[in-house]
Amino acid sequence: MQYLLLIYGAEGAWDGMPVSEASKMTQEFGAFTQSIMDNGNYKGGNRLHPTSKATTVRVRDGKRVVTDGPFAETKEQLGGYYLIEAADLDEATAIAARIPSARFGSIEVRPIFERPPA
Image (cartoon, rainbow, N blue to C red; front, side, top):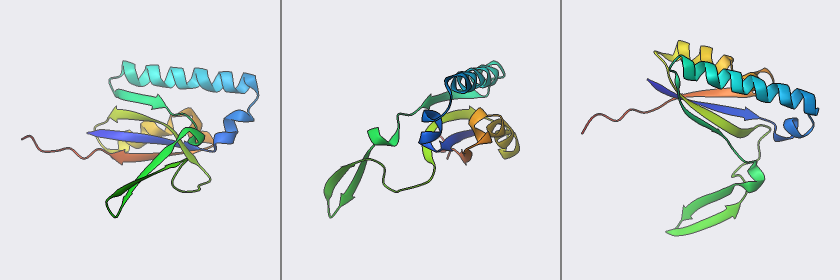
């Protein structure tokens, strides 16, 4: 089954992080990504630009409304994601717990809805 691991954290955490610590965290993410690629769990993933680059789209009364920025104010923002293959939720949460930023942010684990074959 596929799961989306949504990586949340305070965007400012990276800005205030010393260069050496940010470099170490980047290396940890690289090692984590390589490990899930090596064991066949990795299906995709990306880091996202900050919410200041986001655009929100809504349709109200049949009209498209486009605004800059995120839809809601939150303490943690979506910063990236991994799409993984895991046998079950237990394996998916074990993988999510290994994401380096889980130490100071949070990882939301969401199963992917699998459509029945047509």
